[in-house]
Amino acid sequence: MGVISVAGPQFGQRYNVNILGETPTPEEQEKINQFVVEQEASLAQRVEDRFSAPAQEQIVQEVEDEDPKGGFVNAMGVGLDALQVAYGNTLERIGANTGIAGLQDYGTSVIEANEQQIAEKSEGADAP
Image (cartoon, rainbow, N blue to C red; front, side):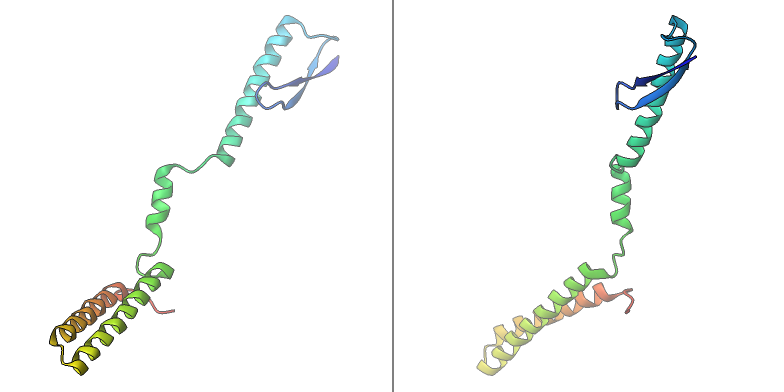
């Protein structure tokens, strides 16, 4: 009884198989070929499972599962809105001090719009 090593065609993985003599008989060769095909298919499936990219639906689901009412991105949005409130406040004060009613009104509208946006973004957000 002998042992031969057979390389798989896809991955080059070596498989040891037992044969009766020094060289495989046609029946043994058929069994060896079938065995190698099965082993290579199993190995290919394991490689695919481990290294394949997740399905597009899974990626979309992961993105949708992120907390829309909090986190860094939401904080950046609130911070920009707060900056715009300060900008509106500055315009409102300049308009009031110079007597330019249009500038004062525009500053007031900027303040109100951004305070509304801050309230909407902060709705439901939990403080740490």
